[in-house]
Image 1 (cartoon, helix red, strand yellow):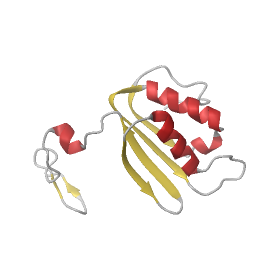
Image 2: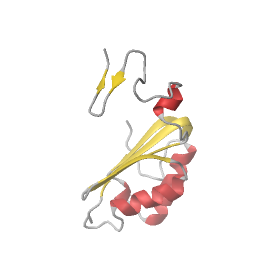
Image 3: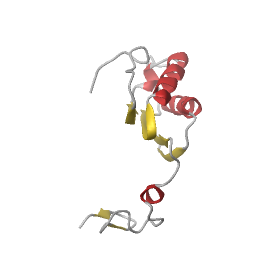
Image 4: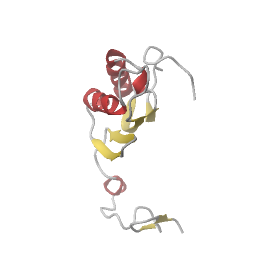
Length: 127
């Protein structure tokens, strides 16, 4: 973990996971667009980007969580793999690779995703 002023001090390396949580609202639109560009250039072939932001207005912030996620969707130009939205928060996941976990693992089925693992609608069990 590192502390930096974003997007100016974005690290020059590639990673497989980037989490943007509760920070995009504090940027202006131009800085957020720059951040999305820098995130995009930092991704490895099967990387994932996860963003989670408060949807309600925040005093002193020009952007809401919805504004942030809409801007990220445009700027990242990646397939959105999943999304969760309620009255208070928004969580989106994007990936360079639009295949599902089952497709990536070659199983083609969601009932068994790893050797010996079984899934149902409520939980994933690892024997």
